[in-house]
Length: 512
Ligand code: MCA
Ligand code: AMP
Image (cartoon, rainbow, N blue to C red):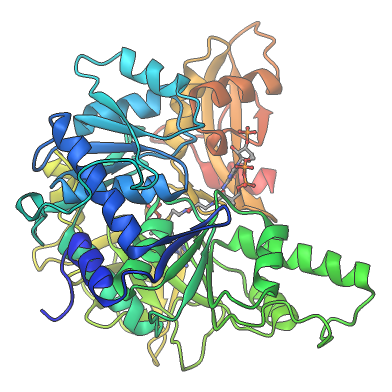
């Protein structure tokens, strides 16, 4: 293997090549590869001193920032497995992830309210130790990476929880070799080099921001201009300065960038194509993923920014699967073909046999990027793969004769809002805990900003007078904010088929 096969090997290669080259830009400060490596070593020593050993799970309860990067790589340098936690999760979601992963330590950062975390830990028999993150190496000891604790390629690098169909999420296990194989494929396909500067506003606690963005930069020893979160005005200001070469986002970010650009052009009284206002002069690549990018957004963006967005398709279990070409035609509405070194095929959902081009079936993928299975869940792991090692993505699509895949839907029930996945069952279970709710069905309806929005259809318990707002607040208190229903519709009965199953397509037709 010619490329580094662990994140720590990639970090060491970057330090050896150009120690002073900036890895991170954050809040007006620059963090070189050497400086990050020193802080990573210090973090690893701190974790080892707290009792973390090889294969232990370390949860990151951190927002975007240098402390996240240090904790992520610090846990790896200590030989541990990172557990990714979305900062929007409430205590029940957190408790499940901490107890299911058996996290030995939780790394927390400055300026973060820890109420939900403390509430989650208070319910656990073995709550793990809470450790402060290290933002930079100055003033700390042990700033040299210890080869004795360095991970091996086959070691687990992280567990990413994906929303579960039963309301309990499953931990997808990715090895170092998986992550680095993905980075090798992505960076080669997108011509990513050490001269690139990626503007990264995606959360690092999901694979899009971490596995594609941060790892790709680490792999190429290039620079990440990191933000706490996405703000359209800030992104446009940054792009206009001409130093950014790449931007990765979810479709909602692109619709917001279009709206903000139009607002500015209107204020300036400029013609849309005015060369007086170049919107992204240095950018060579805009990438979209995590949810479908509409051909309309693709066209509007091309007109305003003069760039054709490259759409790709990925999953927590596999990092990246399919991509439109860097050099060839980027076809709107499609996600292109496999990355180098990976395979894709489409199979009939019942017979599991490959279907001809043009026929819709389930997308299966295979390659070194595909995860090692679900954490402590051999049954779910067995169901996810077929006998020849093909991974069932649960997404439906078809392939054109010239190799472009179009995703048409999902074999599993899943709502994607602004790039975040929401399983209806999880929201339904929370609604059913409310004493005034007799029955509940949750579905995704089209939404101009988020792609899809969560809608709850509720049959109230007899003689109850619950309001829409009460139920939204109830969900908001128990679930991450993005999972709360945007609308609650009260009905006398849910439409059911002869088997008693709720016919959500009928509800969707009625409500759209
Ligand atoms: C935030 N809110 C949302 C969403 N995000 N509601 C519905 N859908 C959303 N996606 C709610 C919050 O709970 C909050 O409500 C209110 O909106 C404002 O929150 P704020 O944080 O200010 O939101 P925002 O900044 O406007 O966020 C929109 C966003 C964000 C920037 C599009 O959702 C985002 O960063 N999405 C990216 C997600 C991502 O990385 N997905 C990758 C997973 P309240 O006030 O009630 O709290 S998929 C993946 O990793 C695979 C590998 C792949 O293919 O990429
Ligand atoms: P997650 O489990 O959060 O990693 O989400 C992965 C899911 O996001 C995939 O299984 C797809 O359903 C969806 N997804 C990712 N990229 C795209 C895309 N470009 N178009 C449509 N759906 C996508």
